[in-house]
Amino acid sequence: MAAPDRNAPSIYDCAVDVDLLTGMRLAKIAIERGELVVIPTDTVYGVGANAFDASAVAALLAAKGRGRQSPPPVLIPSVKTLPGLATDVPPVAHLLAEAFWPGALTMILKSQPSLAWDLGETRGTVALRVPNHSIALALLEETGPLAVSSANLTGEPAATNCQQAADYLGKSVAAYLDAGASPMGEASTILDLTALSATNDDPANVGKLRIVRQGAISADRIAAVVGNLLEVPAVG
Image (cartoon, rainbow, N blue to C red):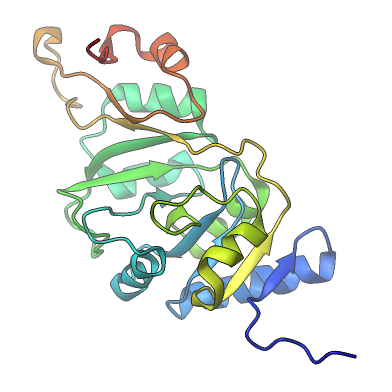
């Protein structure tokens, strides 16, 4: 019998009860220690770290080969967490959350200035999402907000299964939670809401919502919720 490979990543099959319990416990411990974990989401697999641990976030960016100019989004367990992390939240953000959370929409909002975190060069903003995946949500309930980016090396396709993530990130990750193929297999749509003001009641002075990255949620679905607040990209 071959000896176990001590350099192999620690992958836990979430379809097996013992592996699920062990993996979730070790993932929580890893987050508390400032280590990285890979988790399944409804879109693609993500590599996560404690959002309030600057060293852990720096390790996440380093594992991906990414600099501070590309700060990771933050996954949260429910919309109830939003007011604690974002300020000056426009009413349309709540409409979007009602329509698409949990789900594949990431919203860029103004960050609460009092928060003691360092996600990179955010320019006072934070990108938030509630994922629609039971395992991700269960871990978030245990750990609180996690800085999570797609589990791949910068420039490579996003991982849509756990083995792909392990091939990319290897031993830089303390624990991998394997829940099979990603349900969507496509990254979230990122929508920038920072041009809007929560207190501006003059429609003539209200900015537009801008799609920063087109993903699983189409512009048409967003426009059905926000109407003409969505910026229409220039043609040509």
